[in-house]
Image (cartoon, rainbow, N blue to C red; front, side):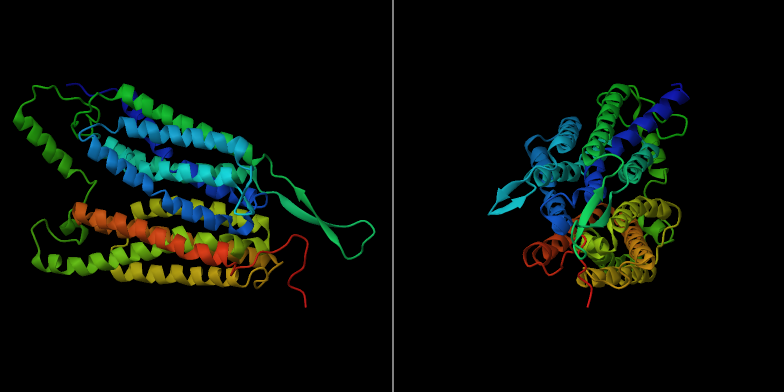
Length: 452
């Protein structure tokens, strides 16, 4: 059968990338918009802690998808994907007009609309982890790489929008008839948060439209295609011979999407009893690294980011959030080209990340009067520490997951459990000190709390 036109291959890669872009764009967009909305919502500097817990609770979406598969075995992923995309589009669209609405809860004002919609979006994003990839399992490995590129865009594009939006700055002006009282005067961003959420909705609509385009472009039901470079989208006839099917399977297995455990350790394809004997120890260490790094990056550190950055100003918080979020996909791209396979090397990188994390935690504890407050050096140090901390930990997570990939499905399942459990424990552990007991102190606009 003749190879499909080059234009069709390029279009399919583009649609797959746009499809992957919608996986986590909603939650990533909310994170990078926190520096803009935190000053207007009643949770104040504790808002990131609330969001960390909600994202962790979003893992209930995984349970819903698992239940659906139990009740409807053998069904395609089309219906749950469309539900996930609909929730993402509707939830983000509702954020645009409703994000600033508050209501009393237990005698205190809370941003009920913002937090409720954030939970809905977290459920959708977490569910996308177990619905999007199975749909693409019918495509050759090159299209999976396009999907992961799209997932990187789900973090980068909201960061670009946030950088274009900028962050408002605060000026303290003297009050009339008072020489000691200063009043805050806010200068707004280039465009408001509502516009940002509408633009984020447009990205999600584009991703949903790309999925519909894939449904029209790909055969239904999708059949396993030939994996040769000249036949990425070739559809096999139903009367294909068994020998040809076996040759196709061998060709697919030869593609470098997955490495066997022996390839991951630089050995030959023959079984190595000694390597298998060391595998449980290495696997336990890698799972421990995944659990700890995800607890720090998805729970502990995000909960105190506002306390470590806002004493240095809104610009410092804005840059730390946006550039830190952009460091995640950039570290993933780096790992695709340069992958550290040494357990000692990953451990050393983890220690380096923890040193940056300890510095940031110390700044949060000392809030609202950390060292170098009010200086450019303090701003540079806190932003650089956040970028390097999140970048190093992101690289460690990708490298550890890649090494566990060689252990097959059980190792990947254990990796998923370690990631989710670590994230949940980190977020839950930090919620009481930040939002209930107020161990970390917030600053006040135009009030000098660091004087003698």
